[in-house]
Each structure stands twice: as C-alpha cells, then as structure tokens.
Length: 391
Image (cartoon, rainbow, N blue to C red):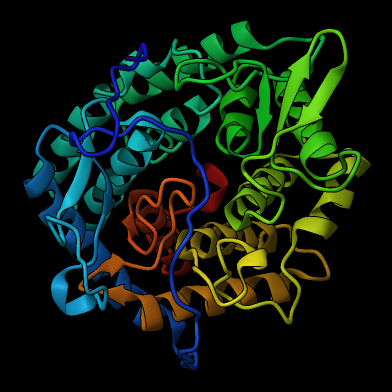
C-alpha cells in the first residue's frame, strides 16, 4: 500500500500513473461544425454538467476515475460487471483535482449554493496531497483549486501546495521529481508531471516553474534519440529514456502542449525561452492530423483517446489568446475538436472513447474524469463561462 492508500483495480480503488490505453475503434464518424458554435457548445456544456450532478449522487464522498459505457452505448460483447457506473478512488489519486474542477464548473454554471458547497467540500478533501511526494500535485491541486470562486480554503490549499512543490524542487536536476507517492522510481521526469505544476509552482517561484518546464521539454521533446514521455535519472550516468509510456503516446504530447501554452500565456520568465517555442512547433497537431487521435499512432486502427483531444483543444484555445499570426487557426482547430467530441463521442453528457492503460487493459474505451473535465473546460471557455488565463 502506498502512502496515498490507493488500492489496485478490482477493489474499487486504483493506484497508478497516467499511462496510455490500448483498445478502441477508429474515428470513422464525421461531423460538420455548425455556424453557431456558442449554441451547440452551451447545450453540450449543460449536458456534461448535468451528468456531473448525477455522478456526484452516485459516488458520494469518493472520487470518480473512469466508467465503462452503459450497455446501450457499448458494443463490447463482454461488458464490465457494472456497466455505466464509475470506478472510484478513496483519495482521488492523480485525478482527484479534475473531479473538484468539474464540481466548480457546475457551481459556476448553475449559481446554486448547493453545487458550490459540494465543490468546496470536495476541494477540501484534496488537502492530504499538498505535501505528497508527486509531481502530479499540479494536476491535483492546480485544476482542483484554480476554478474555485471566493473560497479561502481553496486559495490556502493552492498556496500550501505551491510552497511544498518549491521545497521539493531539485536545482541540480532543474525540476520537481515525479516522486514516489504513486509507486515506482522517484527520480523520473514525465510528461504528465508538467501540466498544472507549471502555473502552480509559478505562484510561488516563476523561475523554478520555468526550469521545471524547460527540463521536461529538453528531455521529453528534444531528448537524444527522439521524443520520449518519461526519463529516469541515474546519479552515475544521467538521464535514460523509459520504455513505458512509449514515444507515440498521444496524451503525453497533449500534456506537454498544455504546459507550453500555459508558459507562453504567463510570459517571462517562464515562457520566453526559445526552447519553448521550438518545442511548440513539434507538439502542435498538424492540419492533416485527426481531431481525435489514436492513443498510440503505432496501433494503426487501434484505440482513440478522446481525453487527449480534449486536452489539446484547451491548449489550442489558450494559444489563441496569444494573438499571434496563428491565433485564428488555433481557435478554429480547438472549436472543431470540441465539436467533433460533442457530436461523435458524447452520449448523455458523458465523453466516451477515452483510453487509460494499455498495459493492463484498464478502461480502454471509457468515460474518463479528466476527459470530461477538459471537454467541459473547453466548452466553458467557448461560451464565456471561464477565462482560460485563470486556469
């Protein structure tokens, strides 16, 4: 049992890293974006946030992680034992902040004090992660608090987490290590240890935040032998690439694009280095790439990962705020991706076809809590509910 107290799948708890998924189906469905994106986005956002309320009633004081499609949505002849129901964790694991973020989005959307109270209570339950030894504190405690509206508890928790992350920053390595709280080696640099941690760390020390980002870009994007989403440090021989996750992990690329977008929006001293701009050119989707990527390009007609598409859509919407020569393309690509997700992969307010863990075959074409969060965040930005410079 790890210090977080998370248990393996099958017991209603999931311990693990953000690793890629394995099975799925190609995105053969086509959709045309309508001329009034705010209207369809508003309707879709309402459906997603209505589903948040239903999920809240289902999970209670636990944290949702992933859900198998319900029988009428799932062509799998061997459905999960509890189709349509969430697999949950007690402490939230690395995804708990996305559930809190969804609750804050619902509270903003409805203006209901009961929704606000639920968001406040959930955010408070993230407190044990503030000093946990994991770089995923960015995912947990940035996205779990950044949308909080007039909540002193969330503000205090965010500040406490930022100070703790700064204490864990290792200047000789130029980063906050991946950490040991979720199991495995501590001295790792991983793509999913960058998003959220850049803006969280910047609230305490922008120089450290910039170093954390650039070290990861240097390894994960510009590393010797080509891009790799994970590296391990050896005191005698330096950094070495990890075999897992593999180089073509779509969500790893999306995480890094989101972190780079946050840095560029923040400006100096985080996002001014030429290295960030050079990495951006390699991380951006090409115009001919599908809006919803395969979880791994090497899998051919294998699984999609709608969560990677949602993360990328939010990153592009952030880049559009830079007002440079490509802003219009960033905005259009982001809207198109969101509309494709809504029209082809959402049912009853649930974003399906997300891909979690290839190696274990866990949640390979499922609803994922972080996929729902980034879809809702993108739609909320498109409809004006959220200012992306603040989250």
